[in-house]
Image 1 (cartoon, rainbow, N blue to C red):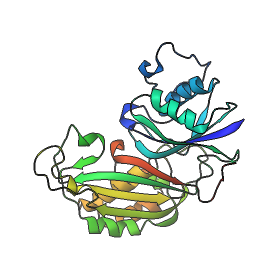
Image 2 (cartoon, rainbow, N blue to C red):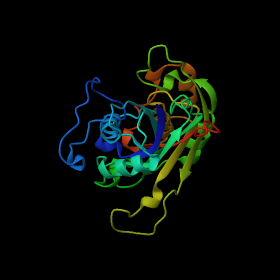
Image 3 (tube, rainbow, N blue to C red):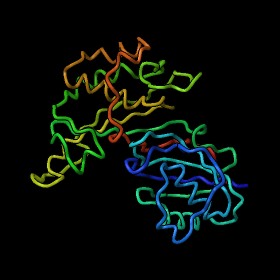
Length: 282
């Protein structure tokens, strides 16, 4: 058996999240052109179905992060074990040809058997995109960012963000944690970046998009909905509804009920997973 790793990106709005929703059962490969098959409900199920067809055996994958329904990725990493002798490049070309619209595999690589996309990761990076002071709704942009009618005080958000950095118990920044899960995480960076997109258009769907804001979040690992909760609490500061110290007070309380409702999922992207020097492909 060999371990295959895949780096992929996907539009989370087209799927019910990353993690499989149905019980694993005997795989039934479809008939006819696989390009025309109905997409599976989740990213994991879609990848397992198409990889099983390509590799000629039942495939089970694991991912670096289990993104929720509506959350996107441009740097997700998954891995699976297979006895197939095919070259990684051949598998990559086949996947690109038959995966459902909304998923693209960027890279395929054989890895050391000890590699695990989740447990080998040293750092994860998420982006959350906000469009403050823009149109209240957009048939184009509202699928990929949180559109806010109000302007935001970005400096106040930055000052509030700095108070959250470091290793803490983030119980107040998660919803529906796994039983027995350790809640301590090391938040390495929480940057509020303005002017991430530039244009001077005054009409059309991209008019005003220079107002887009990106919150870049880096940590060794994240709890469920932690990034969306960080964003939501900082937005309350930016709106002027909360003092700058309130997100930190919520953190110290360990009480999730004291936080704002989580930010909507469509603005969130898993953009990078860092594995440091591990592991070197065999």
